[in-house]
Amino acid sequence: MIVFDHVSVKYAPGEPEVLRDVNLRLEDGQLILVAGRTGSGKSTLLGAINGHVPHFTGGILSGRVTVDGLDTAANPPRELAHVVGVVCQDPLAGFVTDTVEEELAYGMEQLGVDPATMRTRVEETLDILGLADLRSRALRTLSGGQQQRVAIGSVLATGVRILVLDEPTSALDPVSSEEVLAALLRLVHDLGLTVIIAEHRLERVASYADRMILLDGMGSVREGETRFMMETSELVPPVVELGRIAKFEQIPLSVREARRMAGPLRELLSDKNPGDYRRIPPAQGRSSVHADMESAWGADLVASGIVVNYGVVQAVSDVSLRLPAGKITVLMGRNGSGKSSLLWALTGVQKTSGGRFSVDGVALEKQPASKVRSYIRLVPQNASDLLYLPSVEQECEAADRESGSAPGMCRTILEALAPKIDSTTHPRDLSEGQKLCLVLAIQLTARPSVILLDEPTRGLDYPAKSSLTQILSEMAAEGRAVGVVTHDVEFAAEVADQIIVMATGEVIQVGTSSQVLSTSALFAPQVAKVLYPEHWLTPYQVGEVLWEG
Image 1 (cartoon, rainbow, N blue to C red):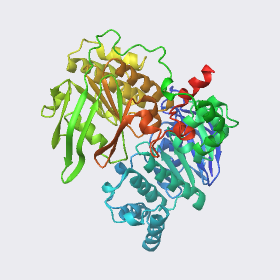
Image 2: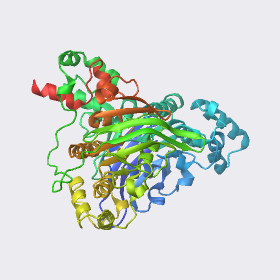
Image 3: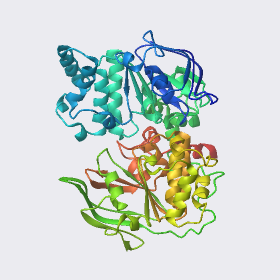
Image 4: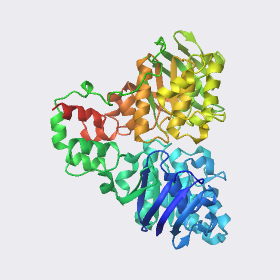
């Protein structure tokens, strides 16, 4: 059992409390979803459970957190390691051995578990998580879902009864996410473990969660049965939003539940054309990122026969595609299908082994990366990788100098993307959404014809993703070609004009968002599954029909 008794946390005297007078009582054997806006304190709440807060993070914790009767303030994380296990967002970064079996044993070795018990636990963990066939595999050769299951197993094998996971599916494709969640459900239902998950993509977890903890961003926390919490939560997955719009008899948490309730809605929509209705709300109160600048891009990115090799491994195989100006193209596919390798090749950073690509008829495949950057800019998966100066102001000034733009141009663009960011703030102290906007502003300052983004929704909550959707739509409206790699099918449903699906380094499908998403078993968004066989993709699109009636 986990008990928060009047717990408050702040990281420096005089700063606002991240958690304020929190009282929780979490019973054993449940899957608990932790939700809230970016920066609302979810990681702090999770860290308080295993003692990372305040032992590693610093700060001031008042009140009392007890886990299985142990006071986390009096017991540092090493004393809680046999009770609470933590699984990080990027499993590969946390691995310390080379193979699956070695990684499962490593944690027990550090705890001094005797060899006989260790061998038994390794075998049991391999079977419980479906890893037996992978026991001798090198960790780097595994898929994202397999790596995450190994990370869970390495913690589970130590004998913990509580698992804490911070966005475990954020970097995974839909199939890999299901693999991980199925493994966690088995631990809860078959072994009685307590699993606590902080996650922004509620559509992946909400239907499985017994309870939900909702943080309001001002320190307060509410907790309750998931369906009850979803009735009033600001943050809800598309299936819940659809239920609200269509006034279903109760809030659905899964596609299965919603489909049972949606018969009358499907009948109402049967004679309507989804293409006649917006997938996202119209932009309101936004100024153009280049409102005072000439919009003169209008150049397609065209690639033919692109090949990317890493030694003997061919990551991209003879790929040809076109990213049209004025459109948003989304690249999708399972982890390891070659999407990111293709993006890096199109920036000139990753050298190609064959093929050509051009913008506005200018061949770029043999040009240095500095030349390619004048046409194509990339926002990588971790936007903060491009931030290296101690303040937002200095980052913007450097972007102006490096691109030859007028002083203040980057700051002007940033203000349009994310207003009122303090110029003196260190970039690492920004929220994930703010970091993304800062890097976008830096890249847009160079006025590229093409902007590429690799998994831009990682770490973003629903309102932040909505803002990003509007930003990308605005860029396309100005005439840029916009390319996005993402596993987030709900985001793709809202933003994509064209979708390209990749597998094993090859393009296997190209089509409109309706053609690809509404008919896909793998990439269909929740609304498409509920309203199949009609081609509706988003709750707002359905709402437009109901509101006009």
